[in-house]
Structure formats: structure tokens, C-alpha cells
Image (cartoon, rainbow, N blue to C red; front, side, top):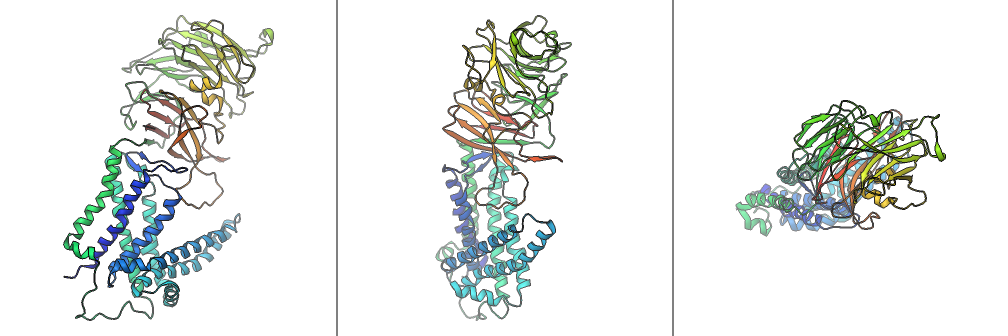
Length: 628
């Protein structure tokens, strides 16, 4: 009994494309140098990819279309015939890629030029390029159906197209090129559209099924174009008494089971992907995006709770570990740099310091606040907040003295103070003057705001760091004992003093952005956007690097290249042994006066189990990473 051609084509496509999909999954689990590692993004498995995969994928696609043409055409042994035609098809593929490359190079020679001239050159190049691509595409069905190889296939293609190039070009444009481009656009980054592992598995299954359908459509269009070559015929008219072409041995053996077994085979890669995700062995990245920018102040992840995101006048509790569901609590204070900030208690309570008040919201989100700004903070230009290990509120302030104020011993005009408050009302504060430093707290052009932070080191001693916008010098104030006896302050790059924290020790206190990133002016290419101390040792930081598509790509235009945020997991501050996990692409900052990369300071926190939450300064991307 003859086997329908469509059933034979389905068997052929499954035999070609399902192993390729399985190879993508299994090969994507192998770590390779210089290639993004395999990871789970929004519940969907993302294999590692690179130039090798980008080069192999077009060859596999061409082989699948070639095999499908052989299965749909009335020829004997379609798979064997298609395999013999594959070298000729690959030569046509290389010729088409070379034609496009030459066209792009010629177009690039016209840049920079007027936009109108570029479009004219592009239109002039489009016609001959399209004519060549049509001829190269028709080499495939000629090689499979007519059995021509090498130069003979190319010669037959160039001769056969004469007189009907326009019609064939339109058919191949909408039937071959357009489906491939639409497929590539729709499944370029499917992980950005899914929200849980089940949708990720379904997206992988839909991708494989769509690929089979697209390849089948391309094969059918190529056959139709081959039949309509002017002055040619596909094959002599078939005699009704002539036996049907012989199918491949596997197709004959499967018979009516071809369709159900083919559908079951298509499920194999999706099932393997589901198993990889369920095994929970890969880094898991969850990206929450927002279209509405908010100025972010702080992030935290107390033990036993979800992440906490703090904005200027509110904070949000993440009700799950992926931060997709949140509950907002409004605050009565307004926080902004350099005055104010937020701190988190061990039980998840939130302390917010604004310009006019200090507010606390306990773990049950019952909030209370002082009636006004603590008296000790009146007249200060910068303030910061943290908590001591015993729950005491620690405030740091920076105050620029008046020009007519006395300046004993030639000390600088900016005074650093440490204030201890027993509760949010701060009725009985203990104030310690750490000393004076040089510089000014005035940010004249808005590009270098003051940065002031206060932290507590591993022994419980308070540490204050200030970066002056006028001198860009980082000054550090510290206490020799827990009760802040013998306070001192000195520039971090000056002579070493006894008890003075080193830059490495400051980095472990999560003040790395004070030492590196220039808030407002952005961060340099090698400077971390955020740094945090890992609970079990080592350092995590988020860096920005130029984003580019996986494998080979072309770039046109003169605008800034997009960046992507990458989490670096380092065993030490020197980051000699680093493991990178890509997080999210961050578009350039565009304004009417300039375009520049979006390398602003990020906010970052980890919990006791080693999970990480990070956000850009405007809350457009909230990223949660498990098992980095």
C-alpha cells in the first residue's frame, strides 16, 4: 500500500529536527568557555549558545528542508536522495550568505551619508541580490528532484529562472523567507514571555512544532516553484500503471503509526526540558519588568521572608520568592539621596529615614513615626541609616560648616557624625562626632551627588563612608570600640591608620558603589553596578557589558549599544575565579541632549540561603536569582 507523501514528509522532518532539538538541550548543558552558561529564565530552560550553534543551525535547517523536499516529491528513496544532494545545497547556502555579506559591505561603504542616499543604494542593491537569492534557493529542489549536482544544478537554476524571476521571487519571499524570519522573530527570546515552568515547557514544544510546520511549508513552496520553472517539467507524466516511488525502509515499517509516533517524538525535547527545570540544578533567573519608572532607595531580603523593595514613599513585600506578587505599604516620609535611606530589621521590619521624619513599619506592617525630624539631624545636608546587631538605630550625618564657622587645626569644612537612637522617636540620642573632612557637599551640576552610607562591621563597630561631589574623595569614619570610643575619620586613599578599614573590608560591608560607581554619572566598563557580600564567603556583583545576539550578528547605526546586566559570582574580591550569569538586557538612556549606556548604580541584596535580588535604580527590572 503506497504511503501518503505528507506522512512520509512528517516522518522525515521528525527524524531530522527532533534529534537536533535534543542535541540543543543536551549540548546546551555543557559549560563552554566564552559562552553564556545554561540557565532557567522565568521557568524556561535557556541552553548555552555561541558561534558554533549559530553556524550549525542554518545547515541543519537546510538539511531538513532538503529531506522534506525529497519526501514530498515523487522520487525513490527520498532520504538517500536528499543526503546526496546536501553538498550542493550547502554550496548554495554559502553562496547566498556570501551575496548578503557583500551587499551589506557595499551598503556600509556608503555610511555615513544622507538617509535618502542610503535608501537609494539599498534599493539598487536589493534587485540584483534578490535575483541571485532566487536562483540559489532553486538549486535545492533541482538537486533533489532532478538529481543534478554541483555546477549542473547551479546552471539549471540560472537558466530555468529566465522569464519568470518576478513571480518566483514573490513566491519564495512569502513562502520561504518570510516564514523563517517570522519564526526567528517569534522565538528569539521566548523566555521573556513565560512566567512559570509549565509555560516554559509548552513554549519549547510550540517552538519545535512550529519549526516542523515552517520547514514543511518551505519545502512545499520550493516544489511548487520548481514545477513552474519556465520551459521545464518536474518529471515526465506518470503512467497510472507505474508503481509508486519506493519509500525509505523506516517509513515503510512504521506505516499507519507514523503520525502518532511522530507526535510522540516531538514531545521528547519538551519532556527533557521539563526534567532539566524540575531537577533544580541550574541557576534560576526571574525577571520582573515594569513600564513605570520609580526611584528605588533600597532592597533587602530578611531571613524567613520574601524580598523587600523600597521606593521613595513606599515599600513592597514580595509574597513569593520570584517577586511576581507584591503587597505595597505606603510611607508618610519621602526618601531621596543624599538625605535619607532605608534599613531592614532581622524580623523584616522596615526603617525609613526621610528629610522630615523617621518611620518604622514592623513585621506586621504596623507603622509609626516621629513627629518631625530628630533634632540632631537639623541642618544636615546628607544622612544615612542602618541597624546595629542589637536593633539600635544608627544614623550618620554629614554637615557642611558655615564659611564663618571656626575651623580648629585646619580641619575640613564637612563634619561627620554618628547618632544612636534607641527607637524610632529618637528622643534620647547619643551623638558622636567622627571628625571633619575636606570637600563640599554641594552638587553644582547634578552629575555627582553626595554618597553617604553607614554600616556595621563583623565585630559590631559602626563604619561611615562619604564621597564628596567636589573632590570625589572617599572618606571613612570608624570607631575603635563598640561604644564608639576614639572615633576617627580619614581619606581612604591616604596614609593607613590603626583600625582604619581597608577597601576590601569596606567592600564586604556592601559599600562598593561608594568606592567605584559614580552615581548620576554612571559606572565605567569594569566597575560593578552593585556589590554584596555572600553569606557563605566570596563576593557577588552586578556588572554591565555590551549586549549582543548569540553567535554571529550584524550591527548598523551609530546609537549606543545596549548593555546587559550580568551577575558575577566570585570566590574573592579580586574575582580571579568568576562564574557569570546573564540577568537582563538594559536599554540605553535616551534624552534630547545625549544617548548613553544605562550603567547606573543598581541595588542588590542576598538572603541567608544565597538567593539574590537586584534592581536597577528605577525599578524597571527586578531580578531574582536562585542557585547562582
